[in-house]
Image (cartoon, rainbow, N blue to C red; front, side, top):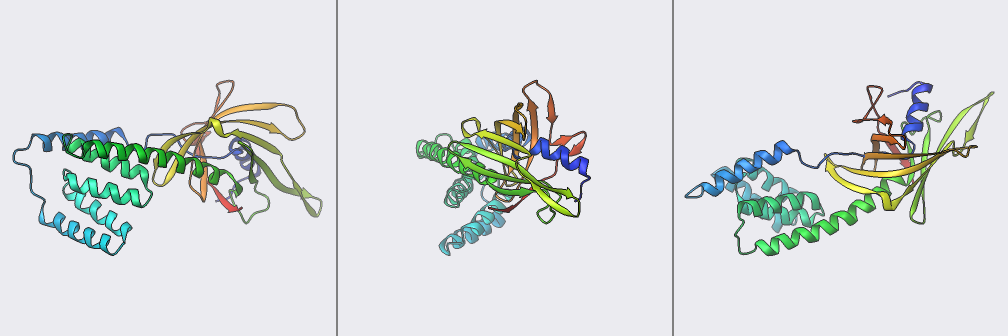
Length: 277
């Protein structure tokens, strides 16, 4: 994707302190759909038997666990649950596997579904306490993920010297992001450093969940243009992983929105790519 110089300038100024998401990890529609599954299962007497096709995936998943192929086992349990979403043991086992894979958000979802289907299970208390442990691990992992998504060199196009490069570095409990760009200077190019500098207080960062592999965070930053004393404060929401990020929301201290729902002036905000440490 290529951008005009004016587009680059706009995106650079509005995206300078880095980018991520804002929305719940699972939609209300999905939650309502599973609640219907729970209601039907709890009222069923007798309880349904696991279909043979789902049983096949169960056997294969358990064999994959013996082979320590946990990713495959998680996939196989997921296939069984597509056939029998009411199967409590399937949700329980998949939760434990996802926890082993450090996919804590998915693990918590599966364990919560297990508890919805078996609210009076003998291990209900232990299962709930496992969720509490995963919550802590997920929050710790998310905090580390935010730093990884902010530090290093990022750009809309890593191979172009005329596209802004965003360089993030950690200073105490702050992350400072500077914009660097090469601009024509006669027959030569000169590097303009810190055209815009943004400071992010890590205490302001909040993890909002994830969707499709991208974690979403909100945070507040203070942005200063080089050569001026003017400081601008923004509340932002970004989505990111370790290799790409983009801004979803940007609201100035005056209440005006620069980016809303991932769009600026009706156009999608593009992702920046990580170019190096």
